[in-house]
Length: 389
Image (cartoon, rainbow, N blue to C red; front, side, top):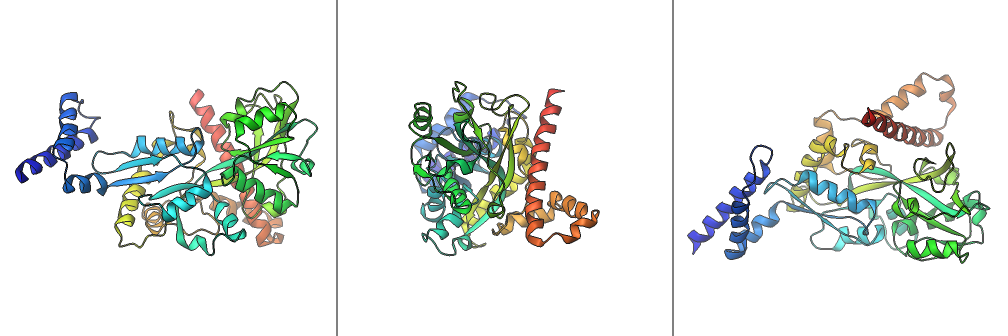
């Protein structure tokens, strides 16, 4: 019996190794089927250990969102036979994902919003929670989109109005409540699923629908506008500058809500690929290290079609204020000479402009966030132009 098990495991390893070399050899469906058959016929403790040894689980977001697409992209690019498997899991929103990373058995990584941990501490749900987390990299920026009648010009016009902020504990809920609190705007919040909220907006039952997600966000781009609605602006006010970035929405993003040639100013919040702060000698840390090496090495592939266009905004070395980077991720960046070039260019720009000497450190950070947003926007446009050639 033991010999049969050894033979079965050897067949599995061999077949997985062959699948990892797909670019060199063609698949033989009968052999693949035989390897799967062996798993079920001769399954054992050893088989279970082999299947789990290099599998990394990633909690993403709700169905239809950008997080789910990012998880699928990572699995598509990084899966490498028995060397590494990325297993995305559909999540329930940013707050739930934080809880899942902390407490759910088997969850190694997750995509969360950068402002979620601050929200949990501010509301008294957690204390020093950032010490329990590390981040692999800052991902893309998620823009705030405010769909409202044209009588609502900016967020400030929603004072006392009925505003939908999606379901409780999701990313939109967290960001919307945080932004309104910081700006001192008191609205009447309702917690309605986005598709239903859009219909209530058309019926005049609510005054605005807020969506926070990577543009173009499907529920916003497919909103059937009869001419009464547009996207209201969000000012990049000082109370927002510590955690948010300035952003711009265009007619190209939402031709159904923005006139050709016009733009709408708004804010954005970074999405973060986060992990629990595992000790460096643990098996979970070892698996995340495998993931980091594969992810960073193959990252350029993700920035090209057919993968999500938001990958073009990602800069692996970009710092994230208030967060500690996963040590093995920082070590990889250092050993490969990858530095946050945006910061270098910004500091060079400041040195070449005498007026910058009068800028306070707080204002300098706000300017840097604007510089980052400008670079991300222009980088995406440049990439789009090159793809058309």
